[in-house]
Picture 1 (cartoon, rainbow, N blue to C red):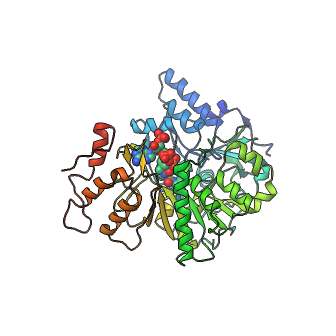
Picture 2: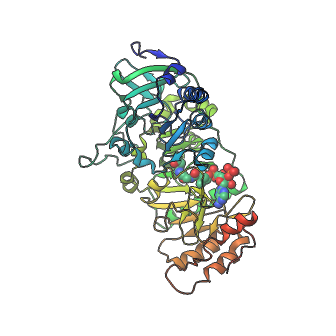
Picture 3: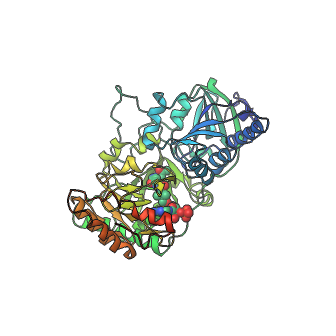
Length: 497
Ligand code: 0RQ
């Protein structure tokens, strides 16, 4: 712990930051996110607004953060611009109201774009740590995200020293920042367990203007227990993978798994753990979430590397923090530029599993927008993994909002992952294997295997409306399902002409 760097209150730190600043923050999901200084900054913004002065900042993070960062700043109308991912209700509303400009980007791209100035200068870094020394050696907490790059590139740095997290987290991180082209070298990871960097981030201590002490858990919400629907989706994924191994398309040695985040992803991992035909596995992913911890304990998951430990606070304390020596050799946190790097995804042959909002009958995926307009969260790391996967899988329930929305539609109302990248779609109804299939074959496969029975006839009618062409699209009816929902609140009874 440093004795030379001044200690500040959160309000003192926030008072240093000017209107118009660009701030880089720690956090990938609420794990390891800066907490107390952003909340103080929101209070400052409110006071400035009351005094009739403008006060807004631009924020770049690893991914989503907690409510004390994204929620507080959004509610204080203190954000002008935000990238690269968010999951906060207040921020989502501000983005969709046009009050915050949100730049939705692939998470592996952020660090290089910061270093090369694509996103402008980073005036401030606000980064959570569990330890810091006088010579500027920083031990991060439950995520790495973009923190090494943000710390290196920011003009000035504020450290939130969070006592909730044990300094014994040292050794859980593998910090490595690649050189940029044309000097980029091979990133030398050949197995998920390979360590290529150092344990801490080292920066010039003269840049650190102060340390703000805190003691707060990560604002990770925990997950809903798996229900009948998510259990069925999970079981279908496990059956698909087990069969691929049985027929030899996945090697018997097995391949590393990546899983997205959320209730469905959690249930999918649970199902993989429960299926005796799935061998023990390693994870090369971005988010390590609750279910992985049980799988590590049981020995089904022998090693997991990601960029965040997105673990509900009780579970984090009672499992990992209670038994650091067991978990240290089995968990490794890396920068998101490394976990999500296409070079590694392709080399390691990762089996990727991400969640869709909707899929169209040709295999295009919308991961980010509701009815083509409103942002949900953002593309996150799903694109980094999907395009370069050994096998790319998307899961979703066949219908949303009590069955009133079909998740399988004639044409995706927003495009995140194209038909060229998506190999398998899985709902609770079944498994659509799109590999090697033409658009005509894919649409049959998706409608028959994945669509909710209520919507199969209408999707089939759409499929047969256009008589010629490689991808039979009816321009007049491509969004008929969405228009029906917007007009009546229900996609049932969709009108097409
Ligand atoms: O709405 O919140 O009002 O209940 O969307 O859907 O079913 O709870 O599923 O939590 O797994 O999230 C795609 C958003 C799924 C997420 C998405 C409504 C539904 C519900 C949430 P409510 P569920 P999940 C790793 C990789 C993109 C980024 C990514 C996501 C809410 O997985 O953001 O994959 N993915 N990153 O009712 C209208 C539809 C709908 C719909 C679902 N068709 N129409 N509403 N919903 N389908 C993460 C990182 O990179 C950090």
